[in-house]
Length: 117
Image 1 (cartoon, rainbow, N blue to C red):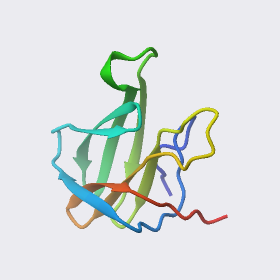
Image 2 (image 1 turned 45 degrees about the horizontal axis):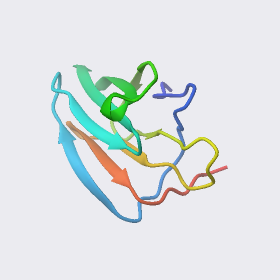
Image 3 (image 1 turned 90 degrees about the horizontal axis):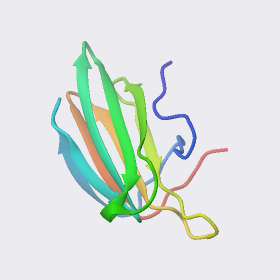
């Protein structure tokens, strides 16, 4: 099974949202979300039932640091999390949940995430 965003500073875990606001994304139309002091731009293309999702994380507001680009795949019913952590902090990092449900891809800011070990 293909998974999405399983590298570097991104977390891919099973999630349980406790409160959220959702946005539905459209193919080839970027959505931009703020996670702490990071901006995440996401767009996707469709190939059959599979969505190729491209996420770019960069410092928000012109902060220092180079952007990081990730490419992955979501099939119907799959979920991925994007998390931009805080170095030196024990606070839970801001997290964005991507869900491919039916013919839609939604992005939701989570206020709490439970991980499965």
